[in-house]
Length: 323
Image (cartoon, rainbow, N blue to C red; front, side, top):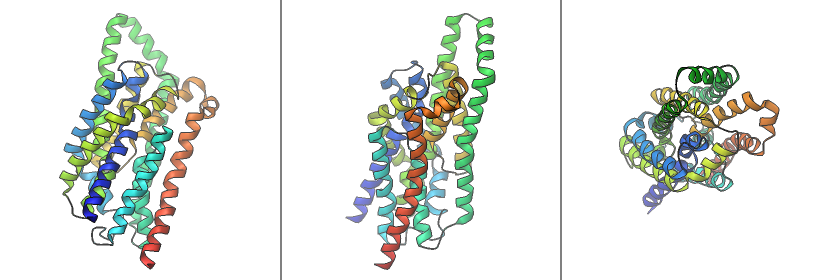
């Protein structure tokens, strides 16, 4: 019965991760009015699943077996429940509030709290992951800020002087959809570990099967609930034209691809949102961007939720060890 319950929780977590994180991978296409909400989440469904199925194993190994030195598969099964339940509650709250929470951070920070309680944390791996967590959103923000500030008008002028407007729009729409699919593919590859890692660590499924199952339910979550997050990321931060959207997709997808290659779990929603905020800062300024309610809520949630998960999981894990 416990194994069945764990499996169901893993599927629920996959579904919620897909709804919150993977849904952001096509937000720019929706925000620029290139695709409808239905078409956006349908493409997410396809490419998130493919990414998890074909490229999800390496990150699953990292999250499931390298953050703590203790084999989580042989410790008390209560810890596996904790790894699944705490992120489910956090992500469900974020979905209700329509905030693109960093789901990867929630899962990994829950495992970090358990590792601290067990006195078995792999400090070098945690430091490596933390560096990626800081560098990737800052990198996405900086690249897109610089493009928005210094290259955006030049790109528009160049395109306007070399081709017809209708032809340009067709090319840009094709690039936008293609780059969005590229981003969704690596969203699946990287974030399938969030739900699959705990059940892989317990030996319930192999890493490849875990990636396949998690990818399917992530895709279903994006299909059925991803539209709510699309609204926040695409409509409430800044206006997104085709060029800005393509930039966010390509830069975000490249960062995800590199992270997945090295087996590093990073947040899709965080880097996409950071790229959009970069453009907002370039076009409207830092102060006006930060004053927006949606941006301030997102930034607060990004900081508060992971830290809370470390503390809460540590306290609960300590209780389990003393019980």
